[in-house]
Amino acid sequence: MPPSETTQQDQLFGSIKIGGNAVLSAPETFTHEQAPAFAEALEVLCSQKQTSVVLDCKKTAFMDSVALEHIIDAHNQLRALGGVFKIVSLNSVCRDILVVTRLVNVLNVYSDVPDALRSRT
Image (tube, rainbow, N blue to C red; front, side):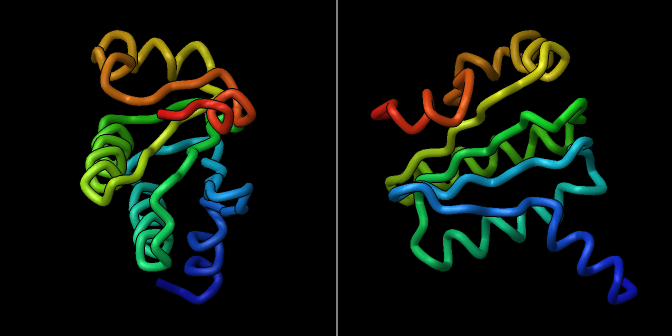
């Protein structure tokens, strides 16, 4: 991977810390192409003992099945560590994908970041 592409991939899932939570910002498209960057960002957070992660999808227009697999993996990985994974600010297309796959019943889905941060789950 050329250096400029690596730098671009590293910035796909920017992270900020709010209290004890890490908030990852998802890119406009979250597909198999961006999934490795998501997995890497999550790995870095877990290595730093950060087990409360919020994925902010306000910019995300679409996610594919590979992205869903990585989201489920993140949910399971953080749960196994005693933490929590939350997903927020889904547009109607992405929310419909979670509804149709019934993942909306498995994942911690919130309307926005403040709502997710207030939640105890």
